[in-house]
Length: 356
Ligand code: 13P
Ligand code: SF4
Image (cartoon, rainbow, N blue to C red; front, side, top):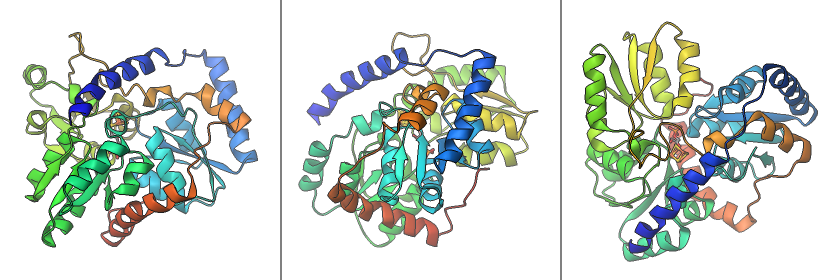
């Protein structure tokens, strides 16, 4: 665990570096041209876009217009493995591309950038995680999808935020004690929801960890009619103020089905594209972060998700570089914990294909 504390600084540095690499904005004409080019490239290469809610809205729009998907990480995994396209282009962060490859080893999996990391993945190196498991042989290991293929290969189960509570409830009902990694906030929330005996790793998301409760209280005095909705990677105190807590897809469904007209949203602001599209008359406010202080590295937007752009999407379709490559044994090992999650989620009706 001591090594992990020293990791935290280098993760912050990487997040800041990623912010500096954000693509330059393009003019309207160039944007139209590149969008048309990508549409042709996708057809020529029998490729489909699998996008996360946090990526640039132009990419989300393209995914929609070309028969791809915008969703949370569980639905992305499911869509990729079921889609007949021979090339999956994953617009998101690296672990999402790796999961797609593990579930569809015979497909080509491309990403606009292979530098799109995740602080949770970076904060849980396989060697340290292996030691953690070895120190607690009596526990069933459960890892969040936001981890490397190597870490998934060491774990008994993989989960996402949309099935974590159901899977831990299932394991708890079998009398199993849990070893959990890497997100401590999600782990604490799942523990509170299930009452399971859980030992948690100390990772955090650089975006969600920055949501601040005091500023949220102030914001609520300005907007007393607003409903707070939050991703469970957010700190516990903030979650205690939220009426809805769930995966990105759960949050999108919430704004679509609840009667409230105003929402304070504690997750990456990229999700506003889909929310505004579904409910153009409702108001969405990003939850306050430590943005005004010196410590804010993410400020409501994942620096790695932001590396995906129209430019690097078109470039990867042209050159075919930036392909996810994993060796056979890594795929075989990681597939065990991921397949358990997919089978369980299918049996429990937790996978509902398509966007909101
Ligand atoms: P979801 O599975 O809820 O989309 O979460 C992925 C993620 O990285 C949130 O920060
Ligand atoms: Fe990882 Fe946080 Fe970015 Fe999600 S928002 S990909 S958890 S760094």
